[in-house]
Image (cartoon, rainbow, N blue to C red; front, side, top):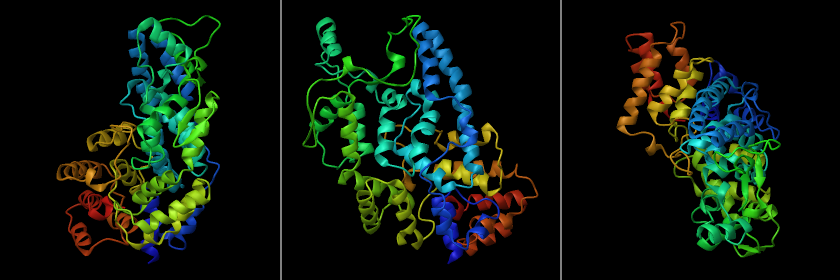
Length: 459
């Protein structure tokens, strides 16, 4: 039983075992997980060397003000340098880390508050967004994480709030009067806050609430866009990429969201609305459902959802207490192998299994592109799917197997297949899988068969 619990702790809560970890965890897998819950999360050393998002955004917008050619070349350069290098450093950290539960929570919450490089201008700053918004709050306050995410320039750019103008604001009246542009309000961010970040699609909000929340966050932008495209800023003004509240964009007057009135107060209207949304019962249930789906099964059991919902509400969205409750759920430990690994989980757990702690860029980015999960490139604000049938089709499975075959051929011969098997999936391996690996014609074929096995492909 302890072997299976160690397997679940390492794979469902973690990112797969490194050599020797399964044996070390047998004594108390739950304690190992709970010891990783630290409200004060430090940025890993490997990632702390990268520039803050405001510096990167400033470079982008200085180029944008100069010429379209400079804008394109600068952005491409940032993709090749800052973005690609931090994506690789992030993967290496997850392969080497002794705190894989914390890293899984980074992946979960980064996906919940998705910002994707499908919006070209946001791409270079997304790793910094994760570093600045997600990592500090994974075991902190959900409300604090929500506000940090919505205020971040990556989010306001990705969902077009940086240029959302209240129709009755001074800027809105100018646009209507001079340009005849009556559509100044952008609802994208407000809609996703309600549908994807807090209440959920069935959370009880109406279109009126979307509009009112959109008005409450008009003016939430960043300093890099204060000046017109290709118009250089005055010499005494520095372009920055920090959050900036633009008062002349903000819709004046009282707002009503979900039946509650928010008096005119500039930036505080939106902050107060986010605080209330963070603690709404629909938000608690929506977050609980997503967490249980991620950690238990694609079809999350209602009993587990109820337990997480209750703790979320009682604790005021304290994610450390929510995480502890997740670990204590009976449903989590009842059955192994209920979840299919996403491509990112598969790639990281594969490197961990054979202790390839210093992979090259193509060892990470190439298979992820082939498997359909390039980092920070979710196809929509909904993020990557957490359902197995979206990752395992016959064609997708063949792509996984082909990559694993190529990868296994490059693994050093000192890696012993039987030892990797016992450390990774020994507690849950079928006799059929064992027999197949034992009959493999070579060591690399045995490793490939192990990594492609149903037991390794699931968590």
